[in-house]
Length: 449
Image 1 (spheres, one colour):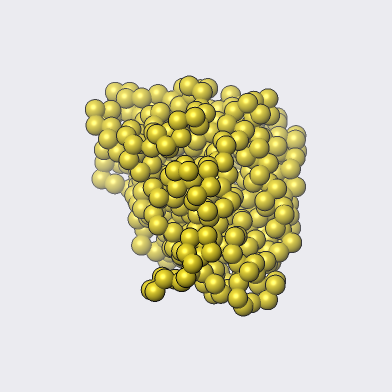
Image 2 (cartoon, rainbow, N blue to C red):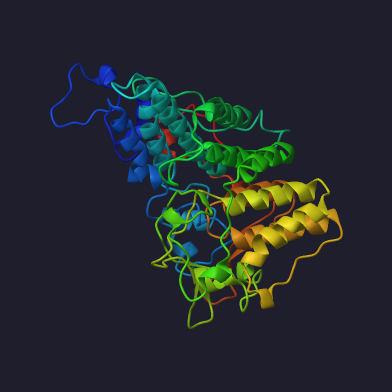
């Protein structure tokens, strides 16, 4: 009976009290219990929901986007360092498990909405169903990231035997923890949840931190991309892009000023924040840019005295680590390239993206004559456009499964010493279920090593 409690008690306490009927006979003085539509809407607007990654942004540290010279293999005590060096356990003790507890805490809050909002004391039936649908969409976002860290990359041949993560839908902590399902079941749950609420999501919402139909379509696109199901990914990408709402900013229009704030930018499909930290570009990533001409470097990076570049901590721009319309354009381009539509893929990359990221005098279209060349061109543009946006780890996993990821090295301060290598096909692409979770759930199956 301790098992369900672990997922919540190790997390930050939920925003609102859980089900009053399940835990309390009377409403305690001074405690807010969600009862009205406004109460449930408050959960969806809470900082802990809109900012699911907290201050440390753990989704960035295992990626090949960054190089962090502050980490050494002799001082692996922080979760960030363990993520950076792809250590088996993000937390190497039984303390509160970073990332795992963060994601499940968000899910716990969102379960308050899905369990209670349809019985709210006010509001119209449609208002209640919309809030329920928004909470379901947000839960899927959190489950997607849990799977990207604690489960292997999706492969149809092994998804039935590999493990997903526990899928929690109840706020009743007295219930036993659900069994750890197969990866196949976990993905099916996310897809079924999203498709079941599509009809109740609005076309537009009060701001871009709240879910819409396009957000659900975008999440379905991302899920199918991570599965390598490029037919379905293209289907949902088209639904987003054909909605009439997809916008990409032309960076040329902002020369001499700054990009719009994330929460007011029309190219941000769904805003999910993380701490606006500074990350040093890896040399490998920097080599993909035209440093003198690419406006993404001009607007989003800061050159240091030692010649390195940092991303982030720009006062006028807090990066969106949710969904962007650029991601969906690139999803479609990759799907087209994989289907052999070279011209269609390059038209998106060149006309929809690159013309807006270079001054006209510096713009050079990408070219390809074969399907493989087109895929490579799209993936390179994806790398440049989506750097530090929180999706790279999932991309690395699916590309590694396809044999498209080279070895990734962590280099020491001297610029020469190789401290760690993430090899193609490595089991280190999957982090182990946290020790704290294992201690309460000794029968939970673990990831293969």
